[in-house]
Image (cartoon, rainbow, N blue to C red; front, side, top):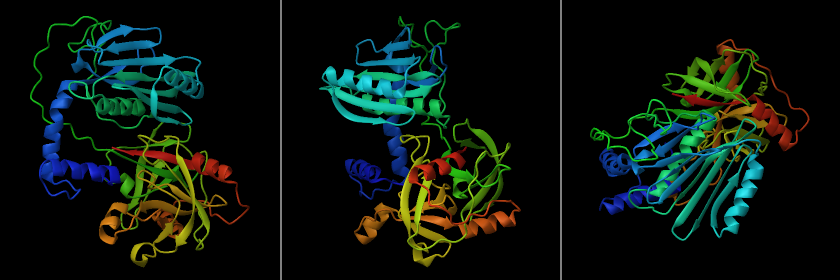
Length: 428
């Protein structure tokens, strides 16, 4: 895990609150203390997943709040008896993300909400707002020929609702359901109209109290990671970083505009941080590889950074080759200025003609640099040189296209070419 400044500061605050040295790095004992502190909140929520009544998409809900569920034309509405929490889980046919975003924004502003955050991407949007102690969070994704999402409001950030924390989990569960990304498992909840009824329900009338749950054992360990990769052969070979697929039981890759498919690990070189995977079917688009690159040359990076909060369709950034070696003059790497984040690892670094000249692998740890050097570096990122990648592919007898400098592509065309050959990788 890579610390962000926000997480680093939050960790220090937790340590100070306990009278401990604020190092910003949790010890094993402190991790246990943090889990123990969070357990009462999680136990109180009793999170369960429920399907949308007509679309089947999953959403986590806190049935520990004694929710009252009502079937609606668009899905289901759930309320806490004292109206401290309300959630609408809706599917809206023949609607677009853009139209819904604009309509929701107008409605919230017109009703007096202060807009705290808003974002719209190609296939989803999020808007948050508040009026005094009342908060609202709206998230919708494209789903078939319409949209699907939830509209949550709450008036309590303390026990038992803890709305600001709860909405983060609910939003993450919808994101995972809509993108096919991994997410922790939890038992299914039931609606009052389900047959047969489950013992734990979001009910219209409160049932008899269920048996007391067993003592909390702490959150279940979920081992998964995500990264990027790209097709290098028509036969379906995918190049990525070795660390992206380290210790995987199963690996899936989601090509552009498609659903995730299982892939096999063909070869892995931990020393040079390279790995090649193989999809069952052929690749529609591949990227040629150019083994040489010049200092100062324009480049672009494509990948899937922070796919839990950013666009799951990929992220494209521009920059230059700023050095022909990595840290401590490591000749295996290029240093580049194109911004990259966690999740970009394994993605293609392409020149202006669309040839791969590197495989994105790392960014300089800004927090560590700030502590050691008193400076926050900007856009100091690294990629494995394409010359190493060609040697790796040759050693494994994988045929790939050799790239050559050609006509310079417009950034939009370059992004389209990289996107169509790239894949979103999930390791479990």
